[in-house]
Length: 198
Image: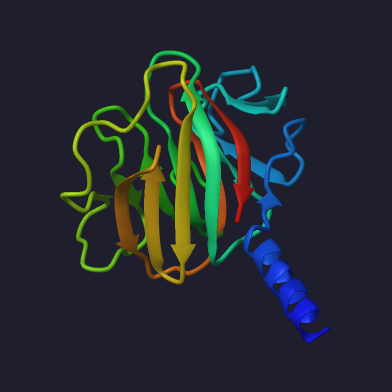
């Protein structure tokens, strides 16, 4: 009997380790808040959801973020460009006060700056907003156009690591230990899917 109880406890522990929280249901924007530039003349929706995919048009500038703040997690998702490569980013540790350029740590997705961080929050030992810990990787881990790129961002306390297609592209230590999660609209159309935390 004791062995059975130990085995059941071990199974429960493994199940807990594999637990995930789905952030995007693939059908609508329930659980998300969006903010765009107020002086924009663009009338088409910037953020839409269909067939399991979050679509971001790139215009006007702004972002979509979670309603809730999160502290320790690994953010898992897939993304691809839906047109020519342009600019965008994935936000973590976003703070209160929605504005076009929010206070948070952004993983840059722009082609020449891919993998850099743009942070409006203090990063340990870093001066200036752009940062990439070098050497982290060689070449470009981003896949060819049209392919889905797998990304994992782990935030534990102030420490953050950023992996794209299994390659560590950056890491940093941030003063903020919780915040919203978001995706930027900045001139280029792109898509996200399979967005969850573990």
